[in-house]
Length: 303
Length: 330
Image (cartoon, rainbow over all chains, first blue to last red; front, top):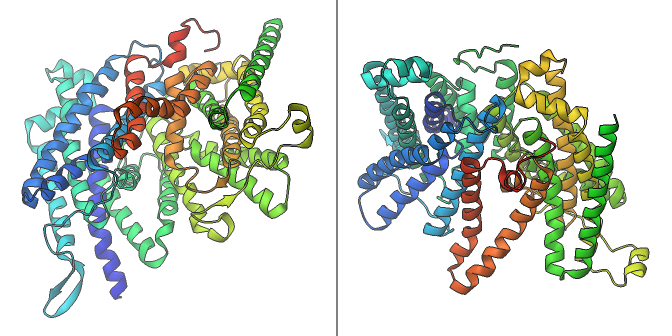
């Protein structure tokens, strides 16, 4: 029972982070039609920035804020320098066909991932380093009894919850969120109603950059920081997003928590070596049985 | 019909010229570069698998490294457990990879674009992790040891003493030539045309009687066979293990394919030479600046990623596209 509860709690806290990563992917997919494989590379880069600041004895919170801001800047930068020029090149015969049209941005994002990883290697050396937590990460003691969760788990879940509330409010309650939803739904109509499509795309990249930077900050304390540590989170985040439906924000969050629990149970009751297999099985099962995911809208195929 | 036959003759001549050229190189080069050219030929076969899959039929795979691992492990098990010869093991490895490609293709035929990319990426990570999971069979993190062995007696008596690196290159050469000949033929055939039709317009090609999902699965099977062949040759250099087929190998193949030109066989050759020799060239330039170790380690990856992005944004056709804009095949 003790083990079961601890699996549930660590799964929920892990799941919250995966939900953030999945949210970041879905934001860019909806907003710009690109699955950003460089996302966790961006997060790794900003976590290194935070780690460097902390290494120079600045406070955790300052580093935290700086990392989030640089995450947003990095996201916008990726869009402005690579993705926007790419999307303008529709006339090229390589981008004519739908198959290549969706493939080329994927390759570009892998190139960005490569630059971020090798850049981090050059700037911050290859040696792994730890990353601190703002609060205690030992089992919380309440009434003399050690609980199966830590203060840091609560911090993670709380932070992610606040982020989700803010995101939901932004999309449902503000004019800019409405404009973003409109341009994601039908860019042509949105353009005709005076929405600046390009800015909305860049904004998606920015918000996604902040969300994934947050995911990086929250997940890194449990592993060492190195240029490729966050690759696994990308895989999990992608699977979570597909489970929930690649175009559903709520779905991606549900998918994130579901995968967090699954991985936690595989970790506790089976062996950590099976995590990749478990992810692969879940991904294939969803893609074969319900390709649109739990909450995704069904793609209309014309054939 | 006569048109096809003349293509066939031209492809044959090019393949023979290619074989002669590499053979001459194999006599002239020093051992280090012999090994590098051998690796370039192995990767050439792997990059051809991407030219067929992504260039010709428009499906992306980030998991070619996993299929290479399937080939490598199948051969290693055949050699070590069944005591088969290297040549039989290579054939078995290709068959194993074809079967893996069939399974993958059946799944992948229903997916497209980013879904396919993500799924194959997960596969690229999951397959090598099987090696550590079933350590007693696959040798865990260390892997299994296989190699090209000694050159046969007739070759040594024919060419004088044949070094190990030279033998690596000479043993790889026939497979690379076969792959080149097979790819150029299939791309100029009816089959290749149906793949390109599929890539350019699925609806139109299905209206013309092309069975979409069957064709997609078929491309995956053929492409996997190529990847498996590349993988077994790559493993025969010494070790078959998860560290030999990392995710970066899959990305290296893709980088080579894109830099050289994803729709061109010549591009595949240029790309595989580029990814193998670029680090050497950068090293020899950087030597004059005496960089720190981390810069020397990461600079090649940085430059090839930069080239990848520049290619995709500025010249998606790659180097080969720039070389001759009027291409016959694609």
